[in-house]
Length: 260
Length: 317
Image 1 (cartoon, rainbow over the protein chains, first blue to last red):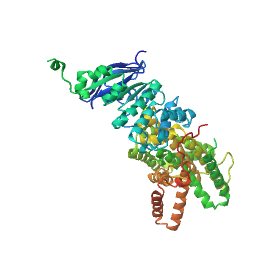
Image 2 (spheres, rainbow over the protein chains, first blue to last red):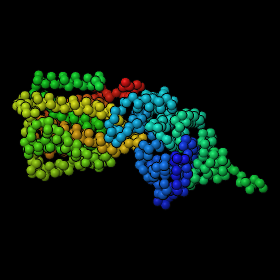
Image 3 (spheres, rainbow over the protein chains, first blue to last red):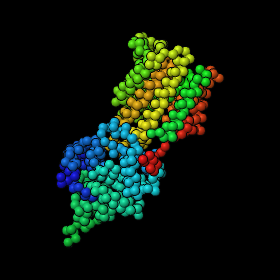
Image 4 (cartoon, each protein chain N blue to C red):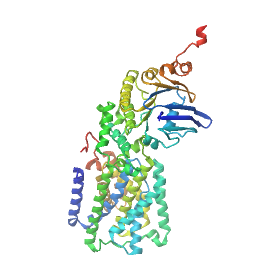
């Protein structure tokens, strides 16, 4: 198995609107992929199709050599693809620890739905996994705080921590640093990336800050108008003229003009 | 697993059992019905924690009651253990079948659909002559494994049976609240998308909760039918469902004990109110609910104790 994720000719249309088209790519295991693109370029649509939130109109998605095209999200999660959200999706009425326990308990269960649902919550393994994730993401100071009261950055970390339980092999982070101040962004990404590296997870993250992308990504996928316009090492992809013109906002002098 | 909470619960039921022979007969019969209805409320607590308020739980209550009544009438089987099991099973089956539809809906749509379903049963019962139509019919008192006491002794024995069933149900529900599904009430209410993306079906979780609540309501209805020795269509009417919701609000969803305490207080307040103000007892009851909501937003149960929150090292053996 060379690629953990193989996408072929993926397309998603909403009526006459083409949200994604002609997406074909392979992601090898343990790669850290940064996804860039302007709002509406199709980044989240892409993630939503991989994680089963949206059913592709056309094309196929293979995960670990298994076809997962159009499967429901909960099945895809159990196969090993997990995700976090642009707007942190947590359980506000529970504490941080309870959030993690809920995530760990669902992820750990084996067997049919009924067996999983009725298994005891407080198994030592579940509690230990919850503890470990809180430690790994360094949110222990907030452990017993109701998550509705958490600072924004901690919410994002909790959301990502919840996505990492149950040993996913592929994690999709939709704008892990959105809404976090520029000073804190690097710290948050440092915590997240070192936590994920230690677990050997393949990561695909959506990010608007090019500094963060070039620092953390090993490969960049640049989305524009529903498709990938550049794919390669950060230095190469970010230097692409179309990427600079359409995405990173850096005004570049066209090569021919520069030569003149 | 004998936690302090289980011990306190067991002790409370033991005290209630021992006190009965010394209590006036009216109080025993009131408590019998109150605790039978407490089972229905216990089921509503399960649903309420997941953010669901059914206005048609009487569907399962009446199913349990009529099952017991019909078995007694047509097969001559009066053993309470057989008829109760049948009543609970029938209600569970109805909950399982209606659950395929109900589990897809939330909020007011769920409440109204469940109400509609209970009113269908009401319509059927009212129109069916063989089931006694609007008058219902008499239910013969139950026997206990061949033991058939009469008069005051029967009432006492039946009260003890209700207590035993309630104690068992309370224990089971407490264990359920400690399971993954039981704990996922608030997450389902808070954020369904996150639950799905953690890898479990919200609809199936809700379906499970519906069946558990349905079995509890069926058991409550079966016990109530045997207690009052009569069934009639009003058991499936929406005001009956509304009454259970009323008690659930009064009791609060904080603990298992709350359901029984709330149900007992409700019956007591209603009896006293009817006695004191025969024409205006609803006003007294409404005032009691209003005061509870204002002064005890967590319900009466918040006085008895709350389900523990998960804390560091909790239960780690």
